[in-house]
Length: 248
Image 1 (cartoon, rainbow, N blue to C red):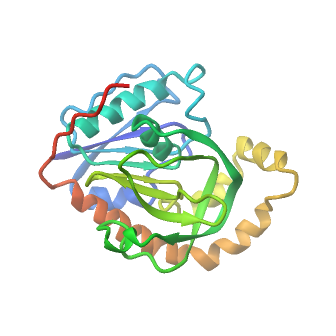
Image 2 (cartoon, one colour):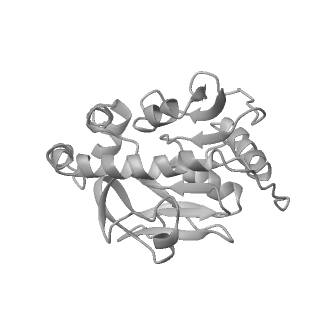
C-alpha cells in the first residue's frame, strides 16, 4: 500500500476534502501531530508524498515551536528525494522558507472569502490549470511568503499577491484553503484562538458575514478541491527526480 505523510499542527486543521481522495487512491495516511508531540522526528523514508497543513503559529516562531525546524528539514529531504510535497497556508510558508524565501506579515489579514486569480503560467499548470479567471476562495492567514528562487507564480490575490506557487515539477504551496468544507469553516469560527484573533482586528472581520457567504461559495470550492487535489494525487505516482538543494 502507498503511504502518505501529513504534518498537522492543531486538531482543527485537517486534510478535509483531501482525505477521501487520498484514501480512494489507495493511500495509507500517517499524521504526525506536532501539537501532541512537538519533538517528533519523522522521516520521509517509505512515503510517496508529504502534505504540510496549516496552523496558527508563524514560521519565525521556531524558538517557541521547534518542530517548525524539524518540518523544514523534512520538507528539504522530501524535495531532494523527489517526493511530491504540498503545503497549505502555514505549510506553504514552510516550503517557501525551506527554499530560501522570506516570510513576512501580509498587507492584510485575510479571514473569509477572497478573490484569487490564476497567473498566465497557471493556465498550463497540471494542478491549477482549471482555475477560472477569478475564484472566490477561503483564507485564514496573517503572514505571506515571497516567491522562492526558481518558483513559478500560479495565483494572486488583490492585497496578498503570492497565493500559490510551484517549485520544480511536484512541489506546491497554496496560501488559500481548498480543503475546507462548511462544517470545518463553522468549527474554525468557534475556535477560541480564532475568536481572539478576529477580536484583535477591531471589526475588520465579521464572522456572521463569513457564515452568510459560505453557502454561496462552498459548492464551487468543493469542485476546485476535487480537481486540484485529484491532480496532485496523480503526481504521487510519477517517477521521482532527485534534486540537490544548496546548503543554507
